[in-house]
Length: 335
Image 1: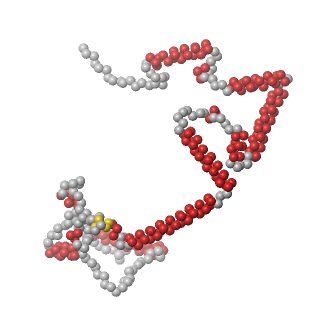
Image 2: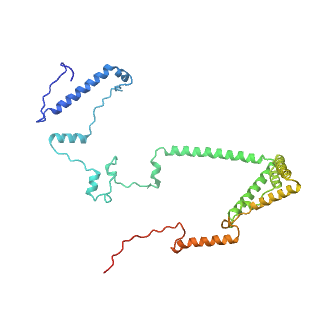
């Protein structure tokens, strides 16, 4: 590895496999040292070392803190030096397998409890002792915490009572007009709730939207006026829209009359347009669409039944009904 001054010789044999491990170990060590020296010479190590900090512990006092080895470990080490076999403690898995396996063996969780008296491990913990609940004395600061909690509850109660008093004062400060308006609003609200309940409990078919009686402008003006709203802008806007629709309709009629040769032709054109419009409102049945008369309709029904005869004879529900035939092998005929 390197020049003549850094070369090393190691004895080894591939036949007896002696010295192979030492050669590998020394080769890896020399290669690692070579790479470390190469990185240090490149200057990259300086930037890395600036980001590293090595902390060395400093003694905080003069108190000696020797190494602590548990007594059980000391006994095991002494027995091992004397050649005495040390029995290993059984694990919970081994105890479980010895005592019936999973589902039968119950793990003993109390044997690891650290108490002043080891005989207390399997004592039954009472819930009531001398007429007092044991759980009340688990926390030594429970009295202080209870006093703080009661104090907080009293403060919240006083704040809530003060807020309720302010609300009552605000309610008493209403004038006669405000009280009247408030009573109207509450009455209207109760009526709307009753109407909603009656609508929900109605056990009948719903009326279509087209047949629901629509409110007129006068009804809307009356309802809005009853709650104190100004409806003058709504009335003026609806009146302007009605006048605009009327002027457009009159303008179309005049244009239709002028397009005809005379007034009579214009009136005929208008009446024919009205008839065609009313005729468009009627819906035609689908089975009669495209039929010239009743004879054509009967002929179409006859052709339809004739076309359905094939799949009806095969016990199919419709022309798109598909049947999967069971392709079973034929049995050989007996001779």
